[in-house]
Image: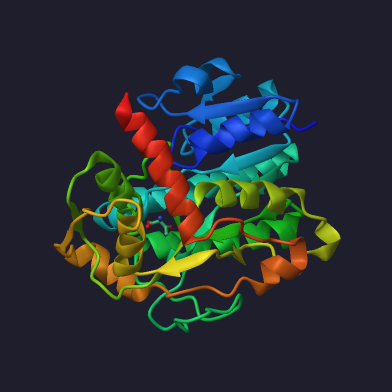
Length: 317
Ligand code: AKB
């Protein structure tokens, strides 16, 4: 049995991860949320929830004590493009919030999962098959918070023994909760346009490769890393994970196999394009495969079939 707190439970990852954790574990799985982003429907009905603003350490501590939490999933963050427009807030949530979470975890003996990202790398990083351990000098505030978060999480493990673990997520694609303000969001939006029968306006230039992943694989990674045998872990914060790398033309042509008349034009967003250009084309996830048996299940083809089927079903009603 585990008692789990998810901070940011109503976001893109949290809304699905909370439900999966409730299926997998018998203990309390507490949906932490901020006012204005309350859980709704099944997420609200299927388990306990609590107001937990990550910038308020007392609220984190109160939820941990009340529900005897032993594991925290810290999913609070501003995505890359939004963080670039609000760098002070991005730091406050990303790093201030992580510090609050780690302090509560240290005092109350909790394990902590905090996602990092392909955004933790920068233009000086090897672009193809980016190694696990390499140059991390990002140029965005999102990247700065992610690489600092990796360091802080490793520090709390080595200095205080807090069981911190993490993966570097690629762009995550899902039909459930849309992302907000990321650089990789186009790879979600394109499916919505195709399923609705609309033309897609792509904000990322042709030829821009980025790593992407279907949400079921990402959720499994978040759970499996926390279940991994600690004796096998050489790394902790954070593991490269990967399943597919593509550029806009590849995903467009893949969707056209199922939606033949689908149209796309380019209107490149300079902010998102500059961020994308500073990120790797593809990551090498050998360490995750060796240290905790990571293996993705979905490739582009399988993801496209599932995304279009689920979205067409939704828009048919
Ligand atoms: C973003 O685009 O900001 C995120 C990420 C890759 O971390 N999806």
